Length: 136
Image (cartoon, rainbow, N blue to C red; front, side, top):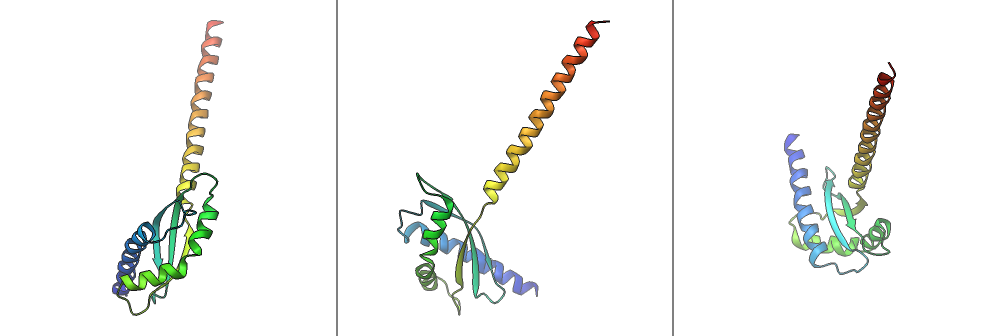
């Protein structure tokens, strides 16, 4: 059982490397911008691969438009992947936008905002105590 898990992990790592090279060197599409593969999940039977990507979009591009452009190349990318890796069956590749970075930044900003609000409240309450202490 653990051997099966490690094989899927090794295949996922190899797919991530090869897909990164394919996207960097072979897929020419101005709509994509810069694509980063953040993770690859492979099914137990190695028939399917979920590829999680992030984009550095330029100008009018949105992550959704970049993802749509990337999905148009799925068949071509799978064909190139089949030439590069030695598997009985080349996994069917599906691309998904990985919003964990964006969500992480949003959460970090929220936490920072709350911390700053707490500091302001403490400073304000400290000033109020100083003012009330002067009256005595």
